[in-house]
Length: 451
Image (cartoon, rainbow, N blue to C red; front, side, top):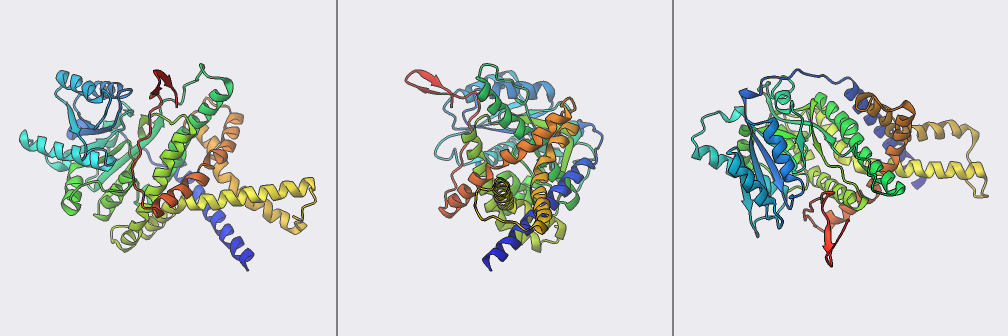
């Protein structure tokens, strides 16, 4: 009986995962593109949360002020112990559009959502103090990581018909690229160089194709999700959330996605704009990647609580509820698919080499077995050629096939991060851990050691 139940659950997971992958791939490849518009119609404010970001914040400020001189930059120093605040203060002395939101302990270091709420309060106070008359409908607030770099057309792209030119759109998310994807790491040994290149390219592929594909599907179901980098919303939406909940952002470890859910529940539309992007730094080592993804997986678990409200909402369609439910449950589906695929592969190999272990498979089962293995593998492998077609046309087709095969290996991290997230949730551990930048070192005994 248990074997029958296991087979049924596994088959359902494999088939649903394959269908979902097909949907996001076809949505991505057939997505709509929109023309840019005049960004000057809106008033722009960019929030940049910082906690010990001296290695990257100077470059971020310079890029933003060069490309978007009309935008206000709100740097949130979350009780940094390095020179982050001093770097911002120097920029403030040279540019009135740069603002420092300084947080101190014990209120500081309570998570990214709390830092963003502090910036929101500072913006509201600044507008009141300066008697700013612009309607909050025409004020756009963006969130950019401390290492984030917006594409030069970012504001004009999201001002267009794909996003805020539509009066019903309350929030928009742009695509994320990894700005260290071309780094060669020539100072490292061949093995370490290959490992770092693998991690960085996988993250770039993940965000520019798989995540972008999910967003393309959500654009059709009306459930585009907000990310922590490259998220934009109308000030009016933030005001509404503040009035309803006391603050725009809440306590989830996926405070960005959670805020996007609240936008939808209030009847606003959300948009994904693929014609522009923001870059960020890909994590270059496994421990930091696992820490980051554990936090994200735990955020998914926390956001599952919103499914009932979404199901009962008149603003969200049944396909939208279904897509959201599947996305939030995706780490568990991936675990089932990976475990199934690995088990079937091992059994097949043992059968072929004849280790004397009884794994006999009737000839009539080989076709079904092979089809299921393909259903479990193709949803990962297809992203290599798609990445080549959409993002890296200079890549050879053979390299894209190999890259597709590596996607499955990369995704194995969920076998660690999802159980860790479940344990943390069961133990009610909700501490927020900042992902350390690649340039940050620890000094031990006067010697800097790379982590």
